[in-house]
Amino acid sequence: MKEGRIIKALSGFYYVLSGDQLIECKGRGLFRKQKITPLVGDRVKVEVQADGTGTIVSVDERINELIRPPVANIDQAVIVNSLAEPDFSPLLLDRFLVLIEHKEIKPLIILTKTDLVKESKQESIDQFMSDYRSLGYDLLTFSKDDPANTIYEAVQPHLADKISVIAGQSGVGKSTFLNVLDVSLQLETGDISKSLGRGKHTTRHVELFSIAGGLIADTPGFSSLEFSEIELDELRYCFPEFVELQDECKFRGCMHMKEPKCAVKAAVDTGDIPAFRYKHYKTFYEEINSRKPRY
Ligand SMILES: Nc1nc2c(ncn2[C@@H]2O[C@H](COP(=O)(O)OP(=O)(O)OP(=O)(O)O)[C@@H](O)[C@H]2O)c(=O)[nH]1
Ligand SMILES: [Mg+2]
Ligand SMILES: [Zn+2]
Image (tube, rainbow, N blue to C red):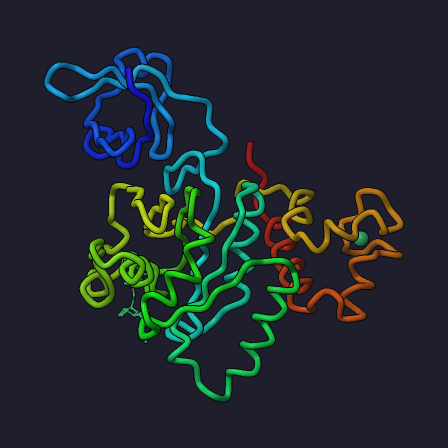
């Protein structure tokens, strides 16, 4: 019996990394009946046959799991947003952050294409970056022209010993970033995939790559950025700076909306909480509130 981690699932086969050995496996027949679907990221036990292939006989309990992309036991989500082409959108970044916070996964923000930032935008971007950092988020910047070793050194401590998924809109430079970290990856980037339009997101399989002492999945991003799994009263917990202040609100269970003596709104007024964060909270709140009830 061997232990390992599924790093790739493709056409009914699971590829399990055990030490430095990669074992091609099938799932146990019983799994189907038990409704167990092994996922990339799962820690598993494998029975190895004489021909070197294996059968997954058990799947360890998961810390967490995502449905899209299908990955389990994620420590961190690397949220990639570009600063230009497409333009930086704090609203979109906050959308990703809320989804990640809701899953209780640690986010790492990477802002790409620093080389394309227009001078007229630099100041406002610097302000956003300092705001996110003061909220406690780890934030790194990236340009594909930066020396690879500088990028590696900045990122390595964040990736080492963790399972990360990379998330972000199409075209922001996710694959480019990973290729800089490991030239041997040669992930498809840019124009080729762009010509396929939305078809680009057809990367059917999720694969964990060993990079910088950790495992990281290049996925086509989170295909849905809707808050369908987030309930209205959960949204406030997805803003860590609100959570920090909630005990100071007059009302227990304050939603930081219409309630009087709300510590969050007071902090927005004094500038201690960036106004744009609160504005996005209200936007998402309305979005969830107007969602059709599910039965
Ligand atoms: N100028 C500049 N261009 C970049 C940078 N990073 C990526 N690009 C370009 O942006 C385009 C998209 O990059 P990709 O790495 O394919 O983007 P992606 O996020 O993997 O996109 P999907 O796989 O479609 O989700 C390519 O043409 C890259 O060369 C950067 O730092 N600076
Ligand atoms: Mg890509
Ligand atoms: Zn409040």
